[in-house]
Picture 1 (cartoon, rainbow, N blue to C red):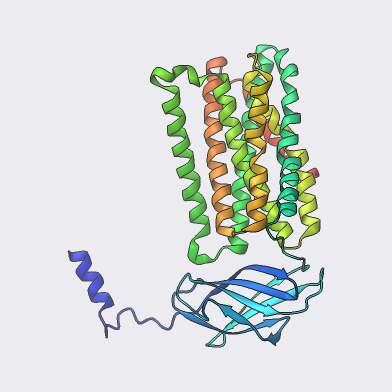
Picture 2 (spheres, rainbow, N blue to C red):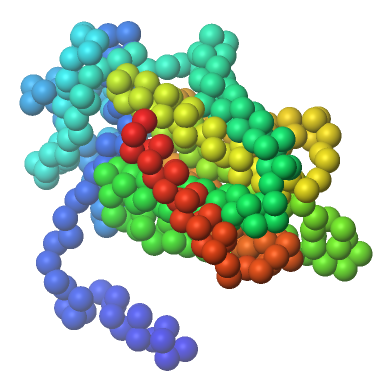
Length: 369
C-alpha cells in the first residue's frame, strides 16, 4: 500500500518532481522489402511516447507513401510504409521516415534485391540450402564412429572432451552472434543483451531440469550413451536453427556475397558436429537408423531456420533462437562432463587437451573458411 501511494503521488497530475524534459521519439525500421516497383519499410515505435509518421524518403528524396494501418503509432506499435518506387537491383538505397516533429530515422540497404515470397519454389530452395548447410555436413561427420571405436580409453576420453570443446565454442559463438544482432538491429527499448542473458539461463536451467528428470527414478536407463548423443543432437539442432536464420536473413537483405559465404562456411564448419554426436557412442553398437535420426535432429533445424529468416525475419526472434541454442549447448556440455566422469578420471591430460583442441578446431574453421 505504501509503495502504491508513493507511485500515485509521483504520477499525480501537476506534480513536477518527474518533470525532467520532453522524451525524444524513437522509430526503428526493422525490415525493408523490395517488390515489383515497390519498397515496403516495416517500422516500429520504440520510443516512450506516441508518434506520427508524416513523410518518407528514398536516398534523401521525399517520395509519396502510404502508411498502414495508421500513421499514428503508440509505443511498440508497428506499421508498413509502402513506397511506390522503380528501384534498380543491386543498387544501394537509404530508406527514411520522418515523424511529425521533424525527426528523421533511416536505414541503408547495401544492394537491393527482390524479397523472397513464400512459394513452392522458394520454400524448396530454402529447404535445399538448409539441407546443404545442416543435414549433409552432420551426416558426413557421423562417419567418425568407426574410427572412434578403435581408440584406447585415454584417446576416447580425449575425443569425448574434444566434443565438449566443440560445443563450448558453438555456445559462445551463438552468444557473440546474438550480441552483434542486438547491437546492430534490436532497439534499445527491448533490452537485447538482457534478453539474451535471460533466455540463455532459462533454456539452460529448463533443459537441465528435464535431463535430470529423465535420468532419475524408474527411467535411470535413459541416461546412457544414446541419451547423451540425443541431447547433443538437440543442442546442435537449436544452434543450426540460428545458422539458418542468419542465411535466410542475409538473402532477404540482398547480401548475396555474405549469404554465399555463410552457406559454404557453415557447411564445412558443421562437419565437426557429427563427431560431437557420435563420440559418446564409441563404446556402443548403435543401429544405422538411429544414427541417421540423430543426424536429422541436429541438421534439419537449419531448414526451419532458413524459412524463418527468409520469410519472417525478426531480429528479436533471431536473438531468442540463438540464446535458446546457446543454453541448450551449455546444458549438453554439462551432460558430457557427467558422462565423462563415469567413463574415467575427469581432470586429466586427455580431458584438458580435448577441450582445448575442440575449441581451437572450431575457431580455426570459422576463421579460415
